Length: 272
Image 1: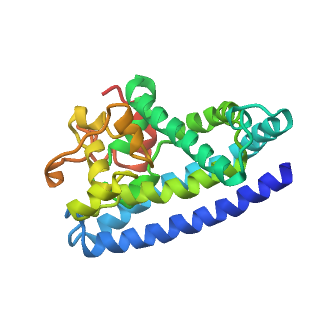
Image 2 (image 1 turned 60 degrees about the horizontal axis):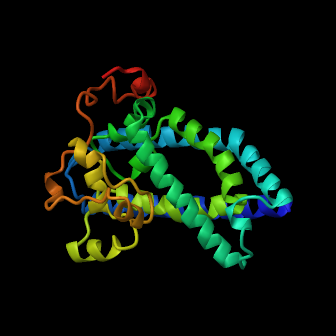
């Protein structure tokens, strides 16, 4: 069972990486030829440096997860399988239904984890790294502080036990979720009609741009990462009639020091 779960995880993880790479390339092209905000018009070098900085953070985080946490998650999943504990063991389900329930449970948790990061001051200090990007684009989907990823990765161990999840469930969720996260962070715009239809199911660019607004009541909304239903159910759904008027980023974090690689790692130490 352990070998099978790890094989399924590796297969899904590889496919997830390929999907993320494909979406990254597609969104970069879309942003180049039809950007929603003109952040980088005739500023190719600045765009490259901005994207490289965000992707370096993503690489550091992914490396830590691969080296430290996958083995811990696998151990938790083996405990679940050996002892039959967790929500997914309450009812016998076919594998496809089990996968759907696992994805829903993980997305439900991701919504509340994100919301908690906005409510608890210590967690917000780390999460500010993500929100301090005033030039949000597809690479912002990878821009998170190492401390935030560390905390979420540690919490995933008891979460796997509580949900009764297997490692391939986690990989499946990330394979589906992360390309959607890339999509709604991208510096693109959809027609109002298409955006409206899509956000019945998933988070869209117009919806997530509100979340990255400098206006706090808007920052503290639209927390979900994949399925928009959670914001609707828990009263955190919000739109802006004219998304072009949204000012992205965080006040007092726009200077070059805060936006350097060193500054981003030091952001949680800033008392602002």
